[in-house]
Image (cartoon, rainbow, N blue to C red):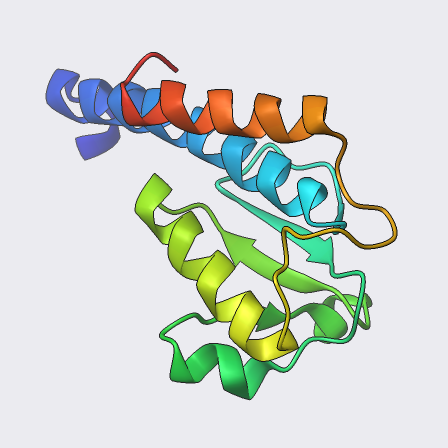
Length: 130
């Protein structure tokens, strides 16, 4: 069985080492934007935006989120873990969909400390430290 082969196990360990910090960075960024994130131990999570989401606009920017209504979570979206550059693309798409700066001041906006933590996490992921 291929799952027992040493090269497969190395690939799996390498994937986990990469995906865990990417998932943490995704969750931190979403929460900084005011999203509510459900706990997850997978390379994806379900999250609810602070405002209704215009999924068709996101798709025009190449971003696809799965509506989680079929999971019994109306208003929530399933978002997969992606490389750090994809978080920037997600941010641009959300800004276009909402017609606002998703990281700008608003109710529930992150504190400067939270924003600094997100930036530090992103930097550590980019530099391979996480």
